[in-house]
Image 1 (cartoon, helix red, strand yellow):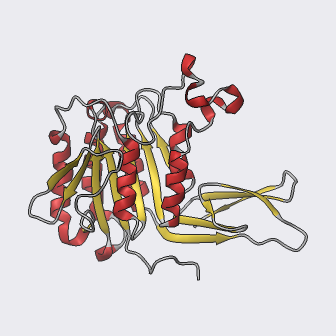
Image 2 (image 1 turned 180 degrees about the vertical axis):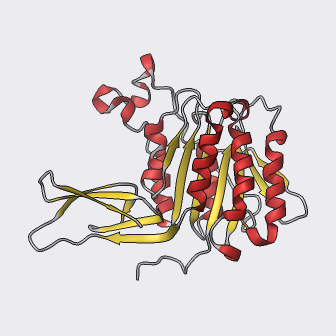
Image 3 (image 1 turned 135 degrees about the vertical axis):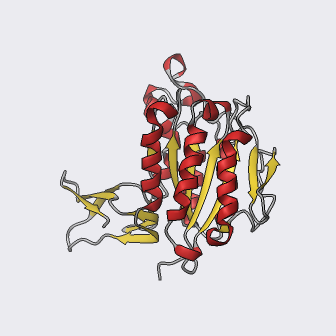
Length: 306
């Protein structure tokens, strides 16, 4: 009674920034190399599906149905679309060699880029379009604060702390700068899409806003400040391998019940509250923690998924 679509195959959609910052810091090389090594160990067996979207100031989709990957560029940011409806995801067991070929080529394909603007919001909207019919896990790899298209963010540090209308009264730097990412996250949760955010920024990132993507979809935020492949590449690689290959469940729900006379006052964790006591979890991984407050007192208890 809790399921939205029929049981879906495990889907992994990788949304990777390929701007100058992503290339120069080594993030693109590290992520591509780790994914090329890890796809052999993704859970799901023969049903697993994967897809890749890259972005800077434009969006790049990849046709993986031929003998070699083919890139299709979409410069439209106001209303991003997928140029290959229904074909952006491929069965990993059938197209493994082509997927690996693409991942191995990505660093050299964008090695000479000078692009500094990034369209993170439109890239995520495109990812939603690609995977909304089946759900799954979206992994966003970001090295630059979103600067163009929907969801662009201003630098709120220092003298610009009140940018986007968020002054000290409104929560300052700890408050989200806009509602775009929360709205998108709620839509993703309804379609059983989880978003993991891998933030490898060398400058201000506005994680208070980007973290909404994970908070409402059951995802996680991994932050690597001042990222450099030399200093933090191994740490990023290990964390990414663990995130993709650990035991995890799809399209989960959690219902919390209390004895008569007691009530749940608040919930804590990454999820979307579908009802009074029903938590929607598009993805739940082993070791994930959730908390709840009972009544109006300061009593708190946490639960862990095993």
